[in-house]
Length: 247
Ligand SMILES: Nc1ncnc2c1ncn2[C@@H]1O[C@H](COP(=O)(O)OP(=O)(O)OP(=O)(O)O)[C@@H](O)[C@H]1O
Picture 1 (cartoon, rainbow, N blue to C red):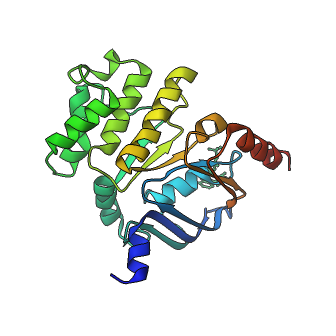
Picture 2 (picture 1 turned 90 degrees about the vertical axis):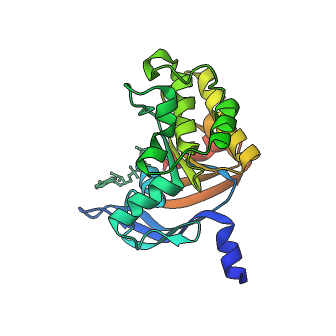
């Protein structure tokens, strides 16, 4: 393995000089470069319209950049056909959304393993047991989503995102619908998944308190990364956001 390959392999996601222009002339991302090392819990913050969702969509292969490249592990996804990107997302990317998006008619257990069935893969039962125990879903697996609290539903959604052992989990405002205490539990869980399993997590959030649970936070404005803050505090992030919003 040459040095460049080993450097790339240590990176779960890499954006290189990514620009995204929408029809109508909006430049939502302007030459953004961002390596996300494996095992990092990264928060993406910034004022409304700063490009957070666009960054997440391009990084996850849900959308394609106008220019620049995106790698998931060693695979450049920005040049793949839509079909290949869909397959790659199923196998190597997990998603957690604000609205848990569980299928109401399926049990918790079937919801968690759904991505595997869609990809035509078999569950790894050892991993499934570890995951369910780690996430605290034992005893809830036969229930329907409506029979769970909001926090339990989001924990089931986190288990579903992790079931295929993805290179990266993208979380879009994962605590937006939860009360403060339950939100704290879900954030602790995301942090433990990174610390205990080396799971890479990229989370978009408006909440400096949530971002402060991450290893690192990037702060965006006008489609660019303005700051990268290691071991961020809620106070420091709130201060940076206030400065950007006042401009
Ligand atoms: N499909 C689209 N077509 C045209 N412009 C778009 C589209 N999606 C986003 N934009 C524009 O791109 C810019 C970045 O939007 P984006 O949704 O990425 O920001 P954001 O930081 O996620 O905002 P918010 O915090 O409000 O969700 C904004 O100016 C937005 O209006």
